Image 1 (cartoon, helix red, strand yellow):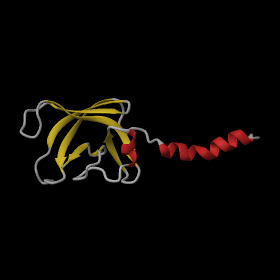
Image 2 (cartoon, one colour):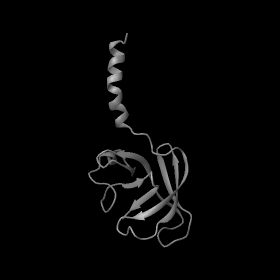
Image 3 (cartoon, helix red, strand yellow):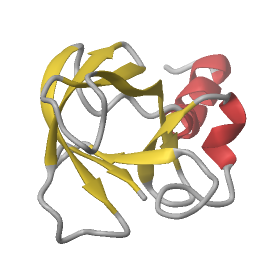
Image 4 (cartoon, helix red, strand yellow):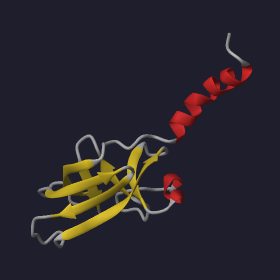
Length: 120
């Protein structure tokens, strides 16, 4: 027989799971590409994503006119429920930003299935 306390926890579990999404990739280094929202037909630029827990650092290892060598961006991987996208947040309020990615003033987004870092 299930006690009332256990039953309450089981009922609340789906709400808790939805509130904190797990990071899309495990700890490690991954090949990513940079794409521009403003110029989506330009060739992608290779980047390396270093992920540790919920922290991500994007690094440019190839000289280019797009980015200097070294760190390009970093932040906390956060699920933005309103847009259904992963963002590179700098502050907990980024999770509820009105706009993200593209030409907005909100946090940048990443496509972790295709491994693309989008900027404008």
